[in-house]
Image (cartoon, rainbow, N blue to C red; front, side):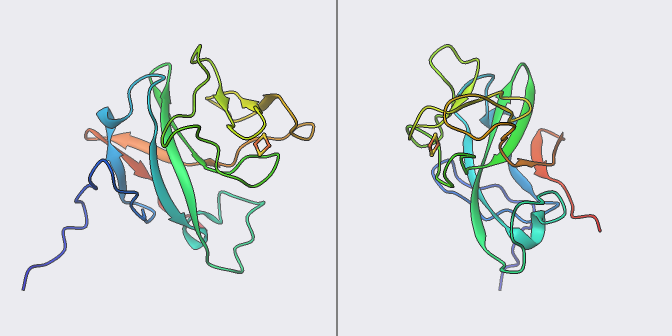
Length: 147
Ligand code: FES
């Protein structure tokens, strides 16, 4: 019987469930201001980072990673206006000029590096829920949970 390689990486067209401390995708999978990579996370893995997620229920939630000005950033795929996924095509989160993340539903826009809402119907001060990630050894990892 073969063992599962915990460091194996998913296929491009597959949205993996990524556990904290494990790789999300290869670093070069997300090019600067290009198509993002969609994945899934469990609330139990990200609750320490995400105050507004109810972690009493261990849900699986959609998330994505993008690259902006050379730096990778990951967020829950959940608009701050209505809790809906935002990409206008799978993995496409950027505006046409590539300067902001845009929600396909009602055009809320967010700064790619902080997730702060900069226009659209979001409540004042709204932002995307950012996930802690680390880029090393040619991969992007979801950071380990810390208590
Ligand atoms: S759901 Fe995103 S702008 Fe309304």
